[in-house]
Length: 284
Image (tube, rainbow, N blue to C red):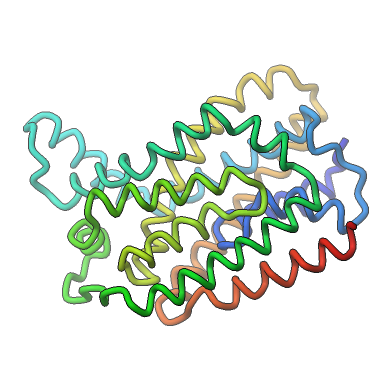
């Protein structure tokens, strides 16, 4: 069982690492091993804890971007009523749908099998190293990408104008690898956005918008039965982790939105390679 202190530490770590491109699930698996905590990552209580922290992260992102989501959802419904995608908000909404489909299908079909196979500290450390390599590769390919059209002031309208349907699908396909503990969902979608020509700032925004439905939907499907089957202690630990995750996610989102206006993925890539290598050396 996780203690309340461990839940707070792991929840804060999840909230931060879910939005940073360094893999939240990889850290949730790797961190207990590095700290010597005896936690069964395959136990029901740990799954309840992880789902609760992911749900808190999704709620935090929705709260930050709720005005944007209202415009996007209205745009989608208007396009359905008019049978035409006539506004940037509607186009962005449908681009998000297209990007979500690959990971959504893969999650439904293969998530349990993939995570049960790879959910071990050593494998998480190995895939963290590969995640760092992906981030470095995205930066190198980004140099040949087109510059973002900063004349369009609204970032959502800018993304809708620059991103094609095919490019949105490419980002979605790359997002699938985040099912493997050690690969980052934010990192994979950021890398995909950079590779198809978005700026760092716009790629991050698109990644955060993507995170809300895919993380939130997965949590909504899993959390009620998990909470209902758990005891009071399990629920209390899950809520502790969720509050800590929400705090970490809020400050992470604010920090990264400013960071990627002028910075790159290189420090995160180096961190993933370093922490993954350290994990392999310690846990071998």
